[in-house]
Image 1: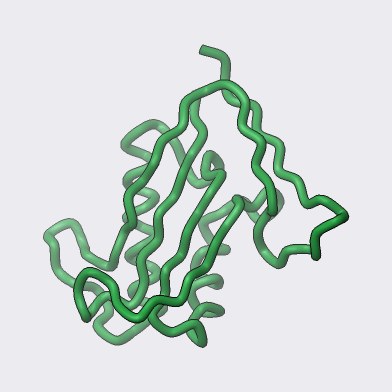
Image 2 (image 1 turned 90 degrees about the vertical axis):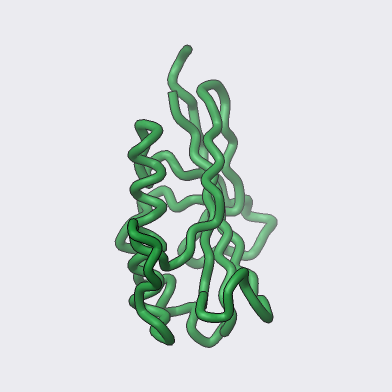
Length: 133
């Protein structure tokens, strides 16, 4: 199978994005869907109760582990969805995200404010789609 060709684009007819791409055109390869990750460490213990930054760090470590498991990395991510319980905390989450994603070719992204997640102690959840060979 040929490696995927991915073109990220930001059409001039849409307002310029901040830290993400509007479009990811994926051709070839295979798509990998990573379920929403929360701030649980490998033993299942919550990391960072009440702390958005600490939870974001664990969430992105979990995403990295999932991507590595299938032979990928954050360079392969073409779509990310971030769910947060408090949109005022989104800048902290983005700071952590920006250390993981390719900032020159950022994935398409959606941020959603939610009233609750699967457990009340979860402050955020992030899912991803990656394009791999």
